[in-house]
Image: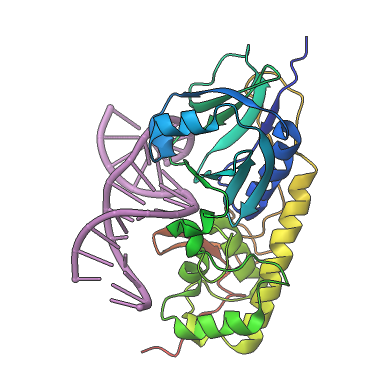
Length: 290
DNA sequence: GGGAGTGTTGAGGT
DNA sequence: TACCTCAACACTCC
């Protein structure tokens, strides 16, 4: 017998993965009511875990929004659950009769006999319950830069921000304050696309380069969202993995492989304690050296 | 079999 | 202020 199982979420969620999760989960939980909550690892919850259970029990999922890499679950009763998947967080919706995974930490019982389960091997993910409309008061959301869309992410502002920074571009793009949603993988990709060395100081980037970088960030994230949109759910037995990450990356994880543009082997270095991939020929460091 | 590597974010230090 | 380093944790790889 084929067990129908839907897993939503992949490894290392960046904005496109979180958006894919948002779309997939929206279909699965909207209008369902929470009849109970089990916290198997209470530290996932920011704030009082008992209060979390008490507040959410009986509430209905109204919709799911997203801000950067944060999911915003909107509930009846003016409640919003802010959820960050960090490294390996995953949500799935399964029949309550299916055995729990070893790393399932939060279980929401739903009124149709299914469960929304939060799974996270490294336990880094966090959930925070707030009154709807006050989520921007959370330090994490308050510091977020604009969403990477043409309407909200503006070249001139981007350029002004970069001119102010002394750190290197890779680190700046990762910190979420200039623009929200980029993680280690897509930062390497967009810098390769734009032919900018990851250790270029922000203030050394020209206006023209800033423009290209800006366009590539929007382009690449949208392309990734589209690519993931086709694989939202699977039919499978236990331990099914969803292949969200088999999309066409050009540098990330390609150490030693030929650059898609010039065939020079891709190099891997460490920048700001993060593995960083680039093409030494296409992405030259043109530093003014101090 | 032990130690390094994996990457997101926040806390704490300078 | 702005920037840097490390801890949170578990598993894989060499």
